[in-house]
Picture 1 (cartoon, helix red, strand yellow):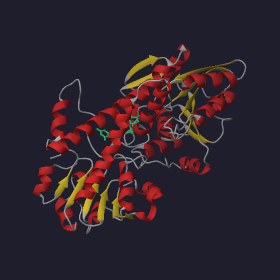
Picture 2 (cartoon, helix red, strand yellow; picture 1 turned 90 degrees about the vertical axis):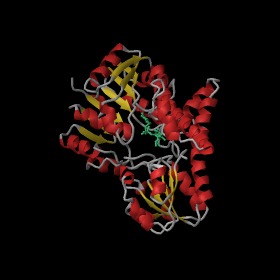
Picture 3 (cartoon, protein in one colour; picture 1 turned 60 degrees about the vertical axis):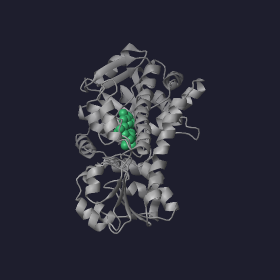
Picture 4 (spheres, helix red, strand yellow; picture 1 turned 180 degrees about the horizontal axis):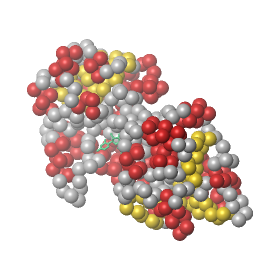
Length: 431
Ligand code: UDX
């Protein structure tokens, strides 16, 4: 059954969900509040870099199934489902800032038409938030209006957001209303994956548990890489062997310069904050965060220990490949420290340079390809495992570099091969 939907917010979750639901044939309104961004979206520019998203946006704009607006008055009254996908940025103390969630919940309730409707929250919110959303909605709704609240957390990854939304491992629907659950299951019918129907609190906690568990696996792999560096063991061999144990597995056990992005750092902190409020010992989560910070610091220390000279080439700036996102990217921390120490940095990333410019501006030299980045440098640093670096012409790289020193923060090369090719090569946890 086709529906009319409103989505509040057009970040990764909002925009990708809007495009996917519109592509199924639904009419989807998207509410934003920045005129310049709305104009770009209406012209088919998704603002953020995400493979396949521009094509899907253009297609559904053309079909008039996707409408961008800044008001609630046309969109919300005709919608059966309104999604909240606004940001929940971290406050100074690590707690999630829920101001936007509560503000839009009030606005939605005031504008929904009498009858049955669902308000579904896809923003990542601490356990207990949707109970409060329910209270706000009930306080502000019109007479004869029956609004049910659902929590439907989203598990998409940047860089593979469309595939993850269309083919997730599971769809979570948390609600105490059977009607709301049925409506959400109907909307998600074309999407594959298992269904988990539960209560609001469990749905909220599933999202934080998933992200914190993945962050824990990464920090554990990084911790083992520290042991390997001190003992001469090889972390990739160790983790390959450990991962063969099906109870453990290998995914999200890739050591490196640390996790970044808009989710893991913020969600681990928010889960810690919730734990503190509930008087739960959160030292495990604190250790996950500390190890992530140590991974960046160790990478920096290693550069400073081995480099002779002051010019460094940099490959990759985004927090992971296939995205232009540099939020909490390990590159930002390390480059800031290197700038303070007077290094000249020639940086290259196929899509993230505009975003890093907003943070580090003219303190970096921006170049157009990976070869230009290594011309006459004393060392090369790799922060992101973009495919274009994996099969690069290493003999050309060697000729261009002044000194043949490489710090690989994502273990994209084999140490033995690099040594044979004439490089002094430092991966993460590799002998
Ligand atoms: C994550 C979750 O995977 C997703 O389910 C959720 O909805 C949002 O948060 P995302 O942040 O887009 O997605 O990227 P992800 O692929 O999970 O990587 C996060 C960070 O962890 C990156 O910096 C990546 O480089 C790092 N990482 C990942 C590792 O260092 N090692 C690994 O083994 C895996």
